[in-house]
Length: 198
Image (tube, rainbow, N blue to C red; front, side, top):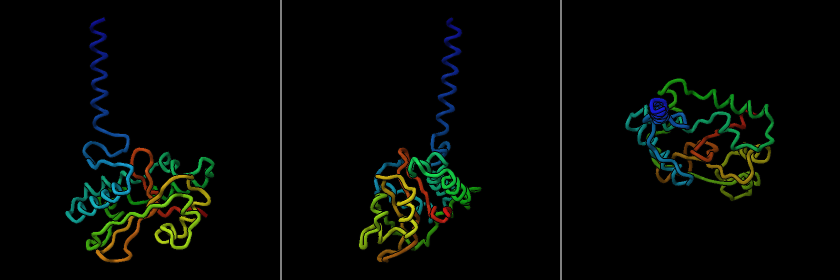
């Protein structure tokens, strides 16, 4: 009996050690130590960290931070209505899988911006605000028209989505990345998924 208990403890110890080397985000050991929180300033800080790593030629870190933003199907579904058509979900997942994630260098370029674009802005709006697209609103000023169609057809109600923008200091516009949301655990990007939907 004592031997069986020791064997069980050893097996549990091995399992815990194995679990410590990976995480539920798929980053792997030491890939990213950035602490994510459900706050717009945290999303902004994440992109500032990516810019810093990119300008410091730390491709491995940029790739790790980027990889965490790319969803699998279960994370995509968290941003979509429960009754989202299966073919639409498949089209979205296929588009996201087509993003260059095969190697660190390609992955690190996914959110590339001019090194002079050092300012990061984050613009948030709810599904309902994006769907209404009222003139002068954040949704109207910062989200592309394709996002309005998504909000009215497929995005989950009562969620907040964000546009992230890299700009040169003092500029009014820069390079934008689309439809980030908090998936309950971490930041996730849908991107320009309106391109996938017919």
